[in-house]
Length: 638
Image 1 (tube, helix red, strand yellow):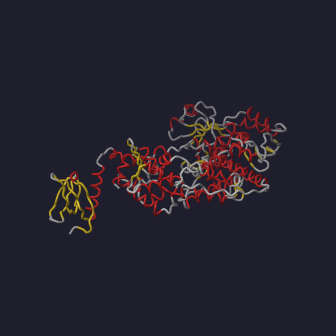
Image 2 (cartoon, helix red, strand yellow):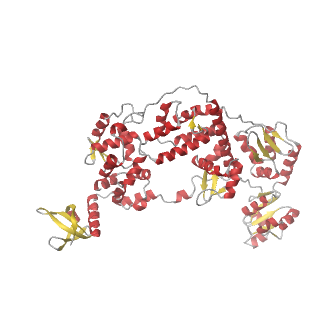
Image 3 (cartoon, one colour):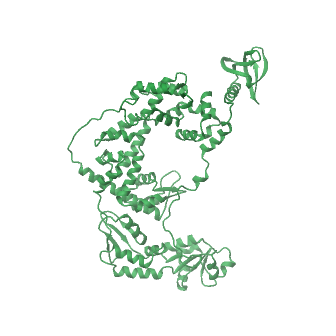
């Protein structure tokens, strides 16, 4: 324990922090380096540290365990032992990695500690770690750990898998469409999340209906979007992220390639390189077998990881009925471009023209390109997806586009570019009507200078929060509208409506009631509004919380520079004996040599031990600096 605590103390703060984060340390249970050392050699900690280690890494650990009979071994001896058992004899790219590189990675798990001093280059392993590796972990032998992977059984078949590829393309296209609909819906209206997980039922039903899927399938879709950082939870709401907003504008090929790249990155390190030896004959059974061979101590945790990967692979079209396809191997090998080319050629071709009809609907004879879809959604409401995309233009949707920064000219230009038959007369009339009505009702912040110039009561009554400017006849309608009664609208001296409610709340209420409302800026003009709410990444709370690992490092820093490791450990041992009323054999340095005492420690403070001598039945007080050694004895003080 003393040796381990001393080596932990010599680690740099970044190296120690990396190890603690790798192991998932609970900083609240650690007070000093001795607590940390005790936690590191607990069987649960050792098991967690070795669970994610690959076969070559476990081979190096096993070699150190066999070479370090007393805890420390020369690294040259470890390398000789590895070579004698076949290391570097063709066990795959990872196994051929030098032992020194593997040792550097193992140091992040705090299972090994290196010390280089001139010609000496040794590695240290605590005896409990060595015992666990040799007896408790049920590890293969060193020669088995260093052996090459099992041979691949080569089989030839001429089965036509084109139908599976088309099926995979159909599933992948449907998944991309559903994901795009989810992002669009969350961008327009965030969904409330529950404290125990999941979504509030009204929002869940809305999103499931928008995405064209069953309610039971929505959690998996939301999880895939979150794993790809396309959506994030901010406070109580799920929002689209800046990454998701960029993803929406990608074409289908780039969208699929982005998700496939993220999927492959979630494989355990080194496993994809091992899987490529199967060439085009990879199966789920072989994938699982190779994964457990590569990570022999992973257990059920690896199965859970593989289950999640395979479930997502099915939605991406990388597997059909649970079995990988030819281009899946390309993704695993890192050639996502070739895999994308092989899959997306079976996607339906996107269109950039549509039929704009007299009933104010827009019907596209196929999937619309993502960039055009985003433009259309700014001024029209999406209604349907499938073999044909449909939108509907309304006065509200046009007003939304105008308040978002569009102009009458840009709206007409968009419909002219899209329409196969020109702009029908009803749509032309609706655009003119929307432009005339746009901004007729203006919501003004009562704190602005313009609001004070409109109505003098604003400066008299400090409780007024909002001023509503509109034609007189429309103001009379607003006052008697029962759906707006909660706003408590009153008519001011200058003929404007006043409210004690915040401007944002007033604007939302008027918008819901389908009035042509806008928010006015300080000069009275129309304030451009972003109708999509984007999550801030990372959420602001993440920067204000103290990292528990950093707090632990600060506590340990108070003793990091101390050279009194042995004295600290001695004081800890004596204090524990005092609490358990144990008797110890204490060796004390004297001027003419040393002497042993049978002592029952009573207390340790100020660098001195107070104890009762069990042989002479007197109390002794000894400086800790004079104590050479302490060892337990059977029995308790009488």
